[in-house]
Image (cartoon, rainbow, N blue to C red):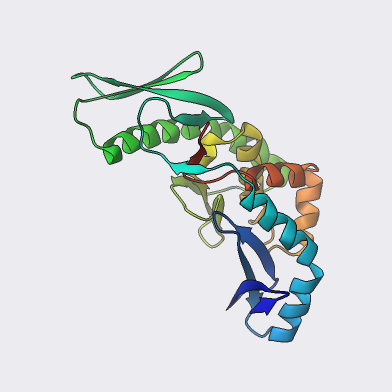
Length: 233
């Protein structure tokens, strides 16, 4: 669908509300809509959001050059929103990750591959999340009045979290270890609220406003984070 010379991907699926997103790295505009929504209604919805859409596209186009991680010395890596410089070291001992000042020391075996180094870093991130998530659940479950039967960590590409309503199981994106603790807390609260309200209805928004009044600010912070890439500085 073209709206004012902007191409928009339209996906119709079994949902109740329309969702609009502008996705990096190319600034792809996507609207997810309920199955019975007419194309004209979607077009009018896009027109009503056109100023915001153009602003987001411009923001993405003006972002600094982004590179894929190779897990070599000199790269920028993040933990809880703080940037560290990677220092790669080799040893015949066990693989390890250690923070020293502003440096992240990655020790691996000689001739390790990029994938092997990535796996070591990701397991370190997983451990960091496992240390944080239980206390957040203990804090928020009694406040919200729900109980997750279980939780897990996934390396997801497009979602920061998800919730299986039937099984009462929540999933947290591995990459949240790179963002601020506030972002992790927002996602935990968001997924727990889904146990009260399945969809992003006005009732869902009301719960978020009640439990986490500044959630929109944190959501904007989270959405500005680029998954799997880093700024070439």
